[in-house]
Length: 185
Image (tube, rainbow, N blue to C red; front, side, top):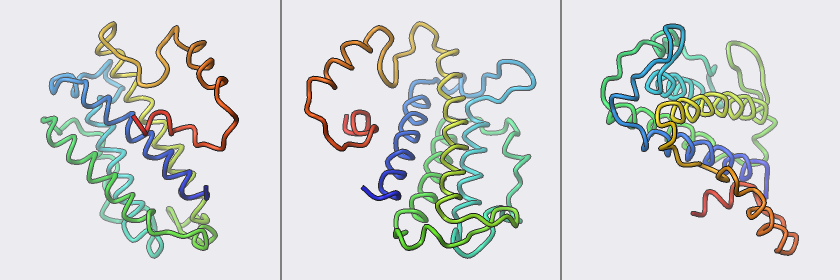
């Protein structure tokens, strides 16, 4: 598996975690804020999508921080419907995949810029993978806080690690991507 194939699988895994979190939360809870200095799920989605749209529009040919992006506005609590939150989430991911899916391994050493700082394509993608995983982790945590005992695990449920590992070790060693268990469901 190439760098790009494996990395795209990781992005799809984090997209899935975010999508499953959003699906579980009622519209009113998308706007719930745990304290005035915190963000709600809708605000985090706005930020992730805003970042994706800025970074991956004309990815190889223009700076990733577009002059039309208003990052501060991404943290305004103005998305009032779950439908709009989901649409923005999907638009961000579509922009990302349209930019990254056609890349080849020959492209990963090309230089792209984010706020005038040069990155190889690989470095820029890794930067965004870490950024999105950080915020999607926040989304999952907020979802768990909202749903509490009604939350269902998005990975290996608590108490099932031994049986999960038993299943893994009962098979022959194989070259697989760690996300395959979750993306193939």
